[in-house]
Length: 70
Image (tube, rainbow, N blue to C red):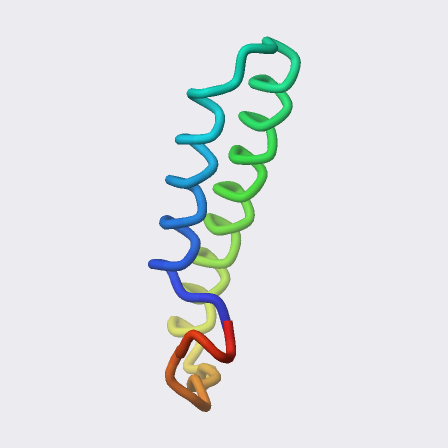
């Protein structure tokens, strides 16, 4: 399961790469991908809020994140 910290660190890495690009096309395509990731994260957050409100039990992470299982 991907964590919020993982999502935000990947978005930060993508923003760093985007800042170094020269092509406006590549910059806009990467910006669009970042936007999609943020929207998907927002949808997931909203789904979790609805599930909590309805009393649905959330799935617990089975293992801690290590370098081997990323």
